[in-house]
Image 1: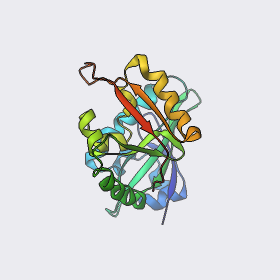
Image 2: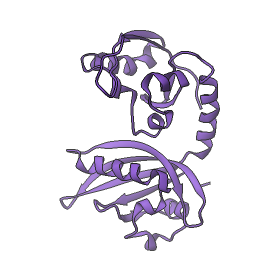
Image 3: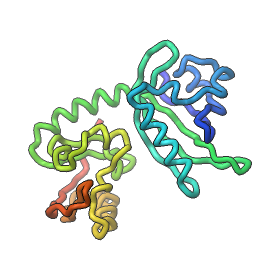
Image 4: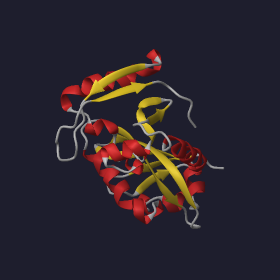
Length: 213
């Protein structure tokens, strides 16, 4: 199974370079990939979100990196759930996007099983990636209801739990998540805001590392 491909994408969204793994994943020869729109391999329902993801990277100042997930469709019509880790790269005064694309189809299946277990818990619960405790990989149904945002928005990277943290509490919440791996258990009270910027009651957050997929 192909697990990762590397691709260089120009500001116009077209592929400038792709390694052999990406060529195999896409079902298109390396030389034929050059000049193709990357979003040709993104399923229709995710295409606009991936385009916004690229635009965010291109318009950001300095070197920026970010992660998103989407459904990848190769030339044969086979679909894979993939994770894209991307960063901007400036060459000859031109901004490009250097991205690695990993097949996470099996990981997503395991995550879906964990999601079913989390939904049985009537509290606000979320799980994070082992390599980055600020990156959400799953949330409970209670968390979705609190934020009024579907779990896919969090797990795809298009929305983050930090987006609803009150600005005055943001630094403390960031420290809380960054320190939790070392402390193993901690608690914190902080305020959240809604999309209408109305202040919600304080919530108390308890956290500890758990085994995940």
